[in-house]
Length: 120
Image (cartoon, rainbow, N blue to C red; front, side, top):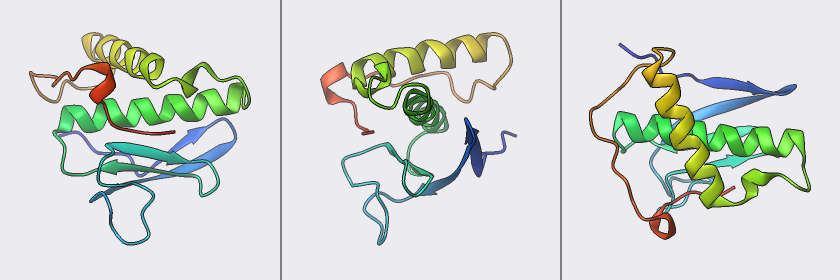
């Protein structure tokens, strides 16, 4: 069984990962988002109501935002949602196909790029 991480290190910073209901009191994650990263609080919030596969994809997506901010705070390529979504999908598929991370479900629900949720 896959054990969901509670923290991730991005560069020299450790981010706490929370799996929550969107719109919860005190949360950064709003009801129309799947995930978000807060650089000031060093936290990543993921909608706990999604499929296991989508939670994994969104977690990788938010980590990519964090990596971009560490690499190039003012010029990160990961500020563009479409780019980040695409890289997250390819990276997730590559890691799963090699057995580095588990395949958690058969289907990966795909949405048109302009319908995806999430923010930096």
